[in-house]
Length: 115
Image 1 (cartoon, rainbow, N blue to C red):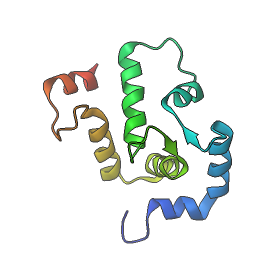
Image 2: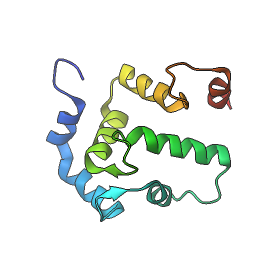
Image 3: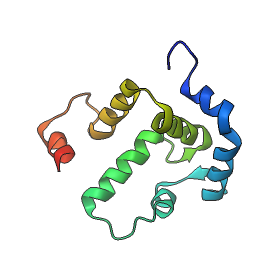
Image 4: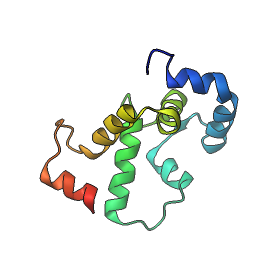
């Protein structure tokens, strides 16, 4: 989020209506649960490691930790993935793979990344 406004502002200005409609089609309740995310992504019969990764993705997007991805969290995730600067994406990836949340990559977390 630099001097020229935030990436969220760019998405808001460009196509908020599109993203809102897409979000509401995917989750008419206005909240996406972990179960619904897996259904949206059509993830059936995935390995335990892949399942753990999907859960970690969900929890990094669930910024307030309430167990749901609401529209604000959804649009922030879309903004990061589509328009985020490299340092923002790297911070997100670090958070994603720092599974114990201690701010460091240990051997097991690095092995997860490489496998």
